Length: 451
Image 1 (cartoon, one colour):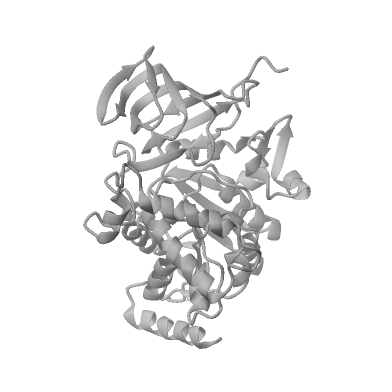
Image 2 (cartoon, one colour; image 1 turned 135 degrees about the vertical axis):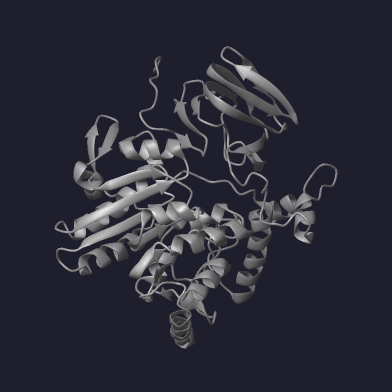
């Protein structure tokens, strides 16, 4: 039996304003203990369904907001938060969190952003506060959300359907309706959980692009929303494996300073097994040096990666990076409301150099189609089907999670654009050249007509 537990070598979770290390699993199955380093605080307000959380402040200071009341805290203070109570905390602190029973999926409901951590803290969901949809999301009967109950009931029924029952057109249409409700209902939070080789077909396309580069060229690559580094290292591995002779200058950026610090170290614990679930044994040997339960990304993969903290929605951040041959912007736009996601995508697209490529998945498909058409980006057809279906986490989330991605449907007239996750910028003069944009739109319309 284990009696002594050392702190994990890599974080168990990373949010915008904090990083957490989960001890265990403990022998006491109904207890969870987590060490938290908060730079700014928890990014969202939340309500626990059944878990009692007790926070002990080791150092630093800040405040907890519990049931709309603020409580100042400092070293030595103990805070107990019961279930079914909205709360959040802010400040620069180190804390120990005791939870009983252990956290389980579906326990926490995220209600709104914490404005001390998230710049757009007044956004609570995709719906405008004055719209009928916001009224529907906020509707309560005897303290309960009928929309939430409706989605839960449909999810139970949907999951019991036999294989193939969700493929007919009527089922897809109803699934789209349910997904629309889920997008209204789900509180948007940035999720820093990630995996190596999360979308293998997308990495394969990046590998092919690197392979086709002219010998001696330098390839400039930007990975935005890099989280704790798994995607950036996966992209670097794919490109360098294809062309060891190719000079690759990679810039990896995330809004979370704690996530970037973890990514920069490139050291992970095998206890966090979900990070490596999609990596084969042979690939694991290529990627990592191992010391017992700790793995470190090999130097030849880490070489040339510049890490920084920044907001991809800010124009000056994009200006500082400069033109890139490949821009990867995956799985963070879906956690923004639509207006913020559109603004951010338009900003990110400015990074793509003429004849460069933009990879963008994990975003509402209607929004991506609208923006890429408007900017005159040409959808890449190579490996289109495989890339769309390649992220099983996003696919399995549809239709009941706001970040879920619908199955590919070739009956849609615009399917060649709608389901493309890679785009090429053909214009040599930039997005302000109206004639080039119009010509590219015409090219895309011809693509749409090829069915």
